[in-house]
Amino acid sequence: QLQLVESGGGLVQSGGSLRLACAASGFTFGTIGWFRQAPGKEREGVSCVSDDNTSYLVSVKGRFTISRDNAKSTVYLQMNDLNPEDSGVYYCAAGRTKLATCHQRNMDYWGKGTLVTVSS
Image (cartoon, rainbow, N blue to C red; front, top):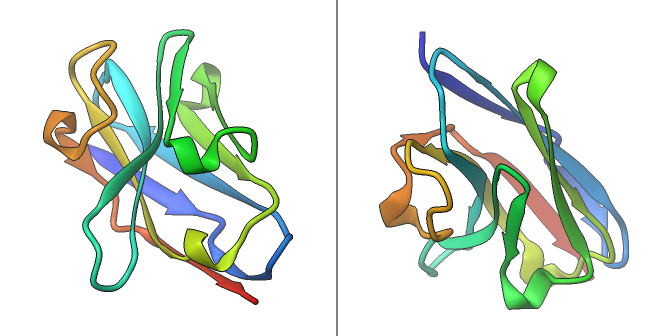
């Protein structure tokens, strides 16, 4: 059964860290990554990975790191130095195409999301 299951969200103070995990099963993907949506805002691509190629939203570069464990079919997002603007629901998403741009239109499968709240 095709599934993307996120975990690791929560409440953290500004400057803190969180690590999100996404376990994928039931399909083969070319690109996988993380998206987020804050209340009243559009969903945006935070970071994606395809083979050894990674991409990051400008505002998270240097603070967030995406990685994958192929043996576990799991992708992680290490988030450091968090600030309130990072708050939102974080979704794991995957697309069949390799090297796809980290945009929601390129993703075919979505998880249900995990909430990240950063307090000031």
